[in-house]
Figure: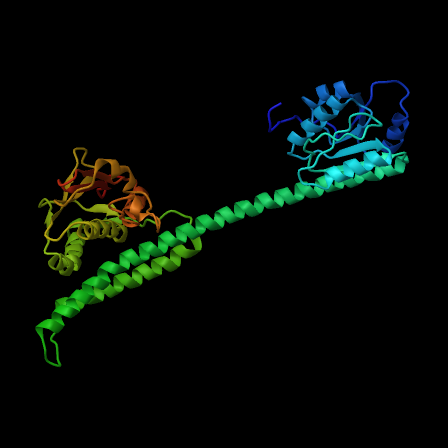
Length: 410
């Protein structure tokens, strides 16, 4: 019979006693007397009958007498050994010191087994025993048999409790591992988002120091405003971290409102101006004159554009041309936003990986290991009911595009 039996539990708890085929067996009154104090039904069957019974019913405990045939022993014990959920206790009844020593010796070994062939034969055939097994040597009193039955059923109950606790611990461990992965993503996202304003302020300060060698460095109001705005954005990101940490498993929070996409993109272009100059790149914004208001979370949408521009600068050689464009779709309910570059492009076989979370240590598996940026872009846009799409070919540039709802269209 194949491993992994799935027997049907009996409706009422029962003890199955497997005895030799014959009338007036001395074991029968002992079994009946022992079961008088046990709240279970007793079923007494011969070896062949027991095998047929075990093929469809799962008893609470099995008692096997050493008088049954060797093949029946092997079959009964084999059936119990396979039915490990829940484990069925097995009590072996035998006669003589040789029998007891042989069975106890087999039970002492992890791979040991015991199958009695005949009442007065000492041959022990190797077969794995069930996880809960005990022996009782004849002659014995009914109370001794009753005590063994109680002991085996108690061990079974303990084993089931331990198994249930093991499963709970395993589930808790799995939850903690998932939580750890999400926390890792969160901190990577924070680092990714903080990098752009920090680098922008560094570039501004370096330019000021290089242009003015005196003790006093004149700073224009526009530069101070940009630096102040960058500091405010960093504080906002840190506040977001504190809000999200207690509930890392929830989706990205989305607080939509009406805003001017043109103004948002002007701010993005101003922040990236130092990096654009450093990479000898160009960044233009192509928007129609009359652009309707967008209904979305401006802070989250700004993160999307920043991620896309940052990734284009990071994963392409210097001198690329970047364009941000937006136009009303044919339905008039949304804007189609595009971020395009004329860089080295992405092979088509890597497109399906681009929005997956790139975990630390496996960056070598993808040429453009963009890490957490595109993953977060996808999560942000999905929170807005949209999706981000990719069009790219090697040496032909890359385009990312997505839809944003227009104010009043929802």
